[in-house]
Figure (cartoon, rainbow, N blue to C red):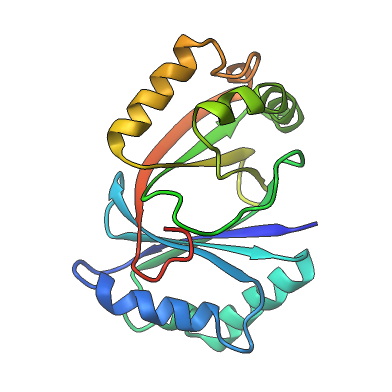
Length: 205
């Protein structure tokens, strides 16, 4: 089963142009495992953050890449200026198609929900029932549940052409009665939402 790694990297102010090519070089080096999907920077929410999204064929490849990072001592090629790094491992909701790279944005909303204990299966079921109708309003890039961390949570990522397109799609989905998924909110405890934009070298842009 494919696994996804989300790296939230805090960088010094005004260092974005320096770190993007270093991150790409690290994630696409011959010895690297996994597929680089995105290099995004935060535009709304916690600033000075770069989000790196990678896909791995299996848990073994992800573990090997994580060990390369820890033992190598130069995470994403920017250890000398890195302020903070938080790594999370996810599995996609099983009914979703694979992530395809390309020009899908350029506005990406990243929403992370905390869930009640035992809420993962119920959330997947609720989203499966509502997915097609909501996806028709505006496409979902991925929804995935965390495999590590202190509490159950899941992340969903939505690409939009603009901030106005995001507002319209969300309003239309509610007006049509296709969102939120029936029964879905009952299992949620917290919500954090951020807007990310693609770096010039991001595969998802």
